[in-house]
Length: 59
Image 1 (spheres, rainbow, N blue to C red):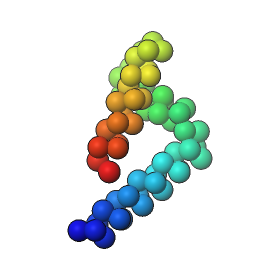
Image 2 (image 1 turned 120 degrees about the horizontal axis):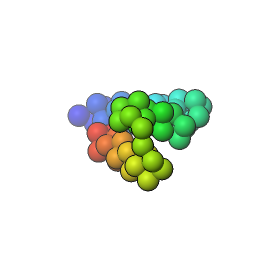
Image 3 (image 1 turned 180 degrees about the vertical axis):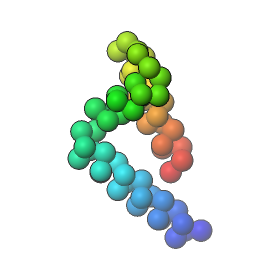
C-alpha cells in the first residue's frame, strides 16, 4: 500500500512540475475555459481553485 501511495505522490509532483514548465496558471485557465466556456474573472478563479482542490483530494 505504501508503495502505491509513494508512486501516486511522485506522479502528482511530476505532473505539477510539467504544468509549471508549460505556463502553470495559464494552462489551468485555458483548461477551465475549454471545459466551461466563457467566464468572467471570478468564475475562472473559482474553476481553477476547484480543479486544484480536486487534484489534492485524489493524491
